[in-house]
Length: 489
Image 1: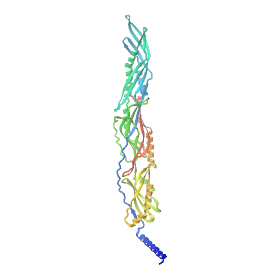
Image 2: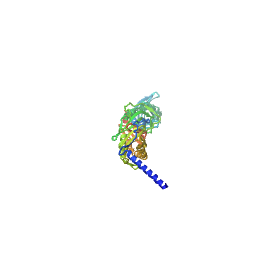
Image 3: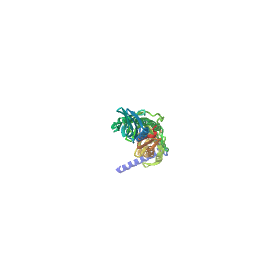
Image 4: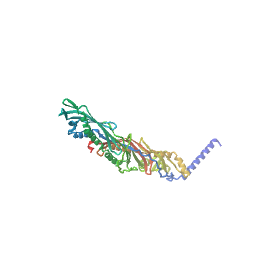
């Protein structure tokens, strides 16, 4: 047998074998939709995830009292008190003095101390009775001059919200003399004692009265009560803030020279609720204003937790138009349908049904992947989808082998299309919150001002109903409490 003949026989035998195998497969492989590839469904059990502890916010509260208001009140009250002359007798000297004050000078220092200078103009008369050579001689002379009183006030804010104050004062008269029968007699001591006894105590009492009657507590208590009320910052979609005030921090009084300031900080937990997001609402039962805890420094800044939950149903509805349609995978026309999403452990399970029409086969596949948040696109997607198939017959093994290129392509298609955008929600949250806290009037004497600086995801975990992402909004929040002279009793 020639070599060529042997080759022809081998080729013929192989051809017959291929034909026989094809005939066998034609009769044995089910046609239509009878060939099915089905994977077991992952369990619908969601693993519990430890959540990051909440971070308290400190809302800076600055109660401002213009020192000019204290000055105006003190000047007015002191002028009324000094409207009548003061008449007294000191040994041989009888005098009647009228004191007029010029404009007060009142400034504050960084430690909250207030310095007051009171320039006086005094005028009046003094009568001296002097016995000379057995005769009582009386002489009356007019008196005019100037003096300057100084007062230092040290107010203190106490933990029970009372304001107390200590004062020191003095008077300086340069020269005050009268001449009787050629004899010069100084009345400086008399006038000094007069001002110290009759004027300075009154001035001290007036200023201390106004300082100690400043009712910061009532105004802060009004803000404290308001903070327990939810703030709706948008109706559709509904976005609201819930605040849980914890305690009051404070620094001691300070001043920039013109304003006496009470620097406080309200420590709170703040949470933003969006739509039907699952939240543990704080206990908003209004409580009495707590006592003050003094600290060396106040660092204001808020941390608003905004828990956003994307339900599996919402992701399904968004993804179905992109996933449930015909795809050409590895040259095979494949219809994907029946997308189902749920949580399984710490992964997202995506169940799909597919039909390979040209092969007359159907299958059901479950993909398991880890949901992630992409800060660049502000969207939730799934990374590293994986799948498993169980086969029970040689024919399914053959189908799986045939599909070794098909299934990864199907997985990549679902992974690419299963993306849920959050940009609109986050943009709306940022915009509405910024509008609300840019300048918000609370009552007649409190203004809330703030900024939204950053929005960052804090965590991502699965619940029985959806993907849960707590976002942290950070910025600064300041309340200005204005105190004016009209609010003094």
